[in-house]
Image (cartoon, rainbow, N blue to C red; front, top):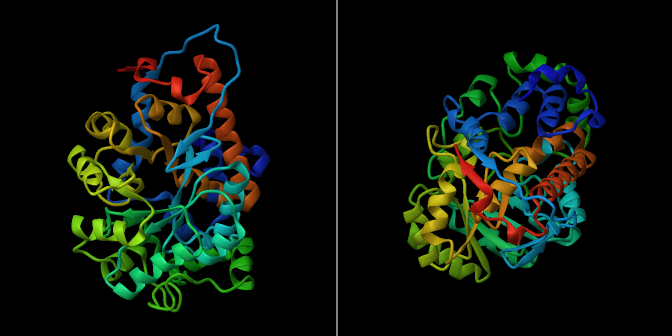
Length: 390
């Protein structure tokens, strides 16, 4: 993460890559909140491998091709200005008081897909009413069938463009950093965390003086996360359906009736099954390393999945993206787009909407520059011929 340069990062203008936003976020957030964003499961080997995997493949550029490039793609039936999507993430108003409003505004301005979590801290209805651009609901399948139906109704009423069912959370991963820091939603003061909250008065002032934190999509059905503090690990284990299966996934697709995606597919067999039930797309993802530590990185698994279903279903590479070149490597293997959560959450924590805008702009510049240096005029020209595996 280039920590040797950390002393230089004190304001947004100092942020020139995602690692810089991470460092600024670390300075500005209380430790429990930062480590919730930054942490993963168990020994966090998979979290690190998600990014390291890109370094095992080299780009081979062509030259004398000119500098005009078109970075746009069509994914899930909507055009995107970049082959980059902002993955759905929960609880965003804990990271900055603007929360999902900041990310939705930045995504709309940039013309990118924005994923909204079932556990968002701004309502599906508000996001749908106020922000243009393509939007997906990340759907957590709950034990409460009334809540499940309500989430679909909210997405329909808000005219969301897609529903994406998360399929890798039938139990929670072991998030040891959260256990050590005592992170809950809403935050709960403990003897070990009180000093960190006190040492970040800007964050604490905004949390105490802005609108009350809540999870508006859930609060009519469950109190957890809005009216009493609960860890994400405990929420998954107590609220989500542990018997989620392919029949329930297919039923959800039919009930939704629109563009449908499965997030958390990692095996070729599951990719084939997703195509068989009529899903429009899959997100090859291990939940940012937050679930099964020791699992394969999405980029490591992408080629196998593309060979299995690349002609049957759209494939989105999710996780580990820190550079524009990572996006191009994923597209060279056949992915329609790449997506990430931490890449914009660090920026949100570092500077709210201006931070997210800056992160998107920097990644957009990296994608454009890398395409120019590779001699590619459009995303369609990228192929595995551009790659060499070490």
